[in-house]
Amino acid sequence: MDLALSHRQFGTGQRCQPFFAPPLGRVRGGRVHDGPIRAAATGVQVHRAAIDPLATKNMELPADLCRRVIADSGVDPVRPLLLQVSRFDPWKDPLGVVHAYRLVKEDLPAVQFVLIGAMAGDDPEGWKSLDRVEEEAANDPDLFVFTNLSGVGSMEVNAFQRSSDVVIQKSLREGFGLVVSEALWKEKPVVAGNTGGIPMQFPEPFHKNLVMSAEACAERALYLLRHPGERGEFGRAGREHVRQHFLMPRLVRDELRLIHQVLESA
Image (tube, rainbow, N blue to C red; front, side):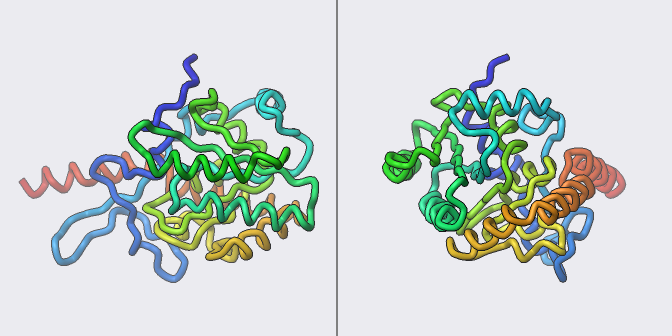
């Protein structure tokens, strides 16, 4: 199996699928409304994005395989682990999440942080962000930076998500951010930026984990690390929320309904 992670594969969560855009107006009162969004002025329908639960990045993995992947990367599979999976883009705030990790570490010295991102040759800003993050990580043995260029592919991302105690997606701006649904599908609690399509991916009782600053991110991450019962509750609720709203079968259903409507109106 070729585990090399292409820019297209890795970026799916941050790039809208063809003809689909994030339904930013679809959350009302903290609730997600099923079905496509209809723009009254134009009649255009916008379908919510979805993840493929059978893809390499989301399929079930044996726990022993996940532990082996983590250990082989140099990360301690026993100690607490924070994770962010994102492009090295200023809008993903990689330096801000590093700051949040360091705030957590002041209170929980055993914590580790892994930042995984994909690099593309035509993204000079991404390379600059990566350089700055690597400078921050240079003297910290508990801060790990991995990319597709270092052999981290879809299966490794899957293993890291399943092995993390808390997943972070500290975006400053976001389209949809499907990495949130990917983590919740694996029953992992998420602390994320309160922006774009991220809030609708959170089950309603856990919107308190939507944040706007590194300090708030650290506070919520530390709280979840110290409360395993709430981590489990969040994870279970998140998986069910994703099952209902953000899996590929729902997207297929919406497309079939659209085809039916087009044929009916022809």
